Image (cartoon, rainbow, N blue to C red):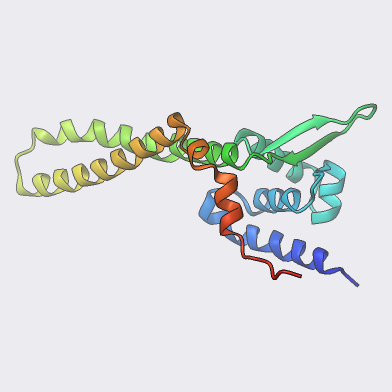
Amino acid sequence: MRSATEEVQREFVQLWARMSKFWGVSAATARVYAWLMSHPNGGDTDAIMTGLRLGRGTVSMACKELREWGLILSEPVAGARRTRHRVDADLGRVVRNVIEHRKRREWDPILEQLRAWLPRLEADRSPEAAVFRERLRAIEACLAMADAMAQTFLEGGTLDRLDLSQLVQKAAPRRAES
């Protein structure tokens, strides 16, 4: 019989896997991250494989991707030929890493392409080109604003000023006093 903690851990891993498509990662990567988040000391590849019933290659690739995103830390285990993986406990750094990674992977290429297309459309004076050009300008303006806000957030230490840990504590449901 599973404990309440084990049940919630299992459900948490399943939820993260379902949400993975919205985050642009594989379900296996999301499952590994959720598993690591639900285990305070993290785990080595064998523990993750056993816990999630995944193959070594899948776990290794997931951990590699999570390291690239800056979401987990991997450290050699003293006296063993193993590596322990654990989540980065600094929520502010994790949020910054995700925003920076998504910005670089998604927004930057779109903005670059829009900024290359707009001058090319200037020469075409047809009504069709004018409508298309305005639509692209609107998209560019919206993405540029979001990009500037993200850049300000990343550079300005906004999370530090907001004291994210305090916000998270305040947002957590209040426990009934004993």
